[in-house]
Image (tube, rainbow, N blue to C red; front, side, top):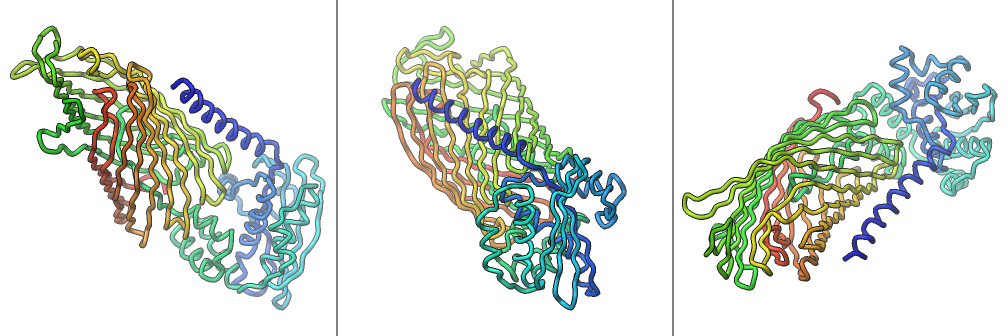
Length: 550
């Protein structure tokens, strides 16, 4: 058991070091701002071509480890300064812009259209010395936009004395020609993105995707504006937030929501036979109302109100003494909880987000000793803390997140060895890890979730659940999901295992989402150490997006 604990915490520490190392790598890399290229052309459809090429070049540069200034940060700063990128013609203004963005280098360029042939010139300027590090030009047809942007990126990286990734070299060697409409449509989409017209941006990006389905830039921006996400929460824990607080750093919209999970009782008041003459019923109901708010790009907060009722029952095969009264054959504590939690997440860079939260709640336990005999404990206040991190690829096709929740809350247990019922337990440490991959512009999700409960009281041990899930959005307003669950339990010197499944879906109507999940699974009993039971849980959620921020 000690080895397992050490192993889990070592894994967390290693993952934390990886995340910090990734951040350190980003911090130590060169920070570059690519400004929109100016366009000289009689062709009116090329009006926004400079925006598209700036993004093509920026995405190529980011492959080398360069820290690229996010486009949103540039457009927000320009709005604050009441400027437009087209107004940054003067070199001094370009350098000043770079300094305000904390960029070490600024890339600027011009596109000249001569009878359908493009000549693209560029300069790399140091914001520290105001010197031109490198300047050059690349010629080619507009249909060769991949070759042109890759060639510019190769020359920039060479000037900065950085290695050129193989993917850039391959594009230069291939010199593939594609349809000019793809780059024009993508450039129009970037202009709509700058104007916060996400509906038009998505329409233009989808058109560009049809023309050039392999375009990295198109896929990255489709991921940026997509609001679909996998939703397969199975059960809510009072002391753990609905989501990893690190995910709050990725908020694009505010969200108001209510969510409820409840266990469906079976026959005989939900009491199941779990062996050795014991019968157990655990019927938690957890209700939440919450709000997510993006304070600004990369920083989000969350607040939740929580109410729960847990009705635990144990039928005991022998007589035992309960609150000083002998001859009892059942144990029936009912736990009411009311409280709330707050959390925050901060996106340190494009790849790493950190988050944390704190919960405070009041618990009151009532013991059913028989007909008209109830004893209530004095209400007590407990606290819980949650820390998490999230790492992702730039296009958000792969996301890994982990968070851990620890609480001061105690639990009533029935000890089958001593035949005693007492408040001698602690709620487990909960560690949740999720690996998410997405395909087809975030329409198909493959998710692997792992939940570990670590018990540090007399139940000493752990319970591990592995849950692979597939979720598909066949249309923008509907998703369906299904998954399998395997549980391995080692508690109180007992080893148990079981399996289950989940199914559900989401209906999106305008800015409202209605979520439904149905789960059947095998789980350890919280109140009878060393035993497990089947559990049927329903989770229902209603949320409204973009009420205040879009």
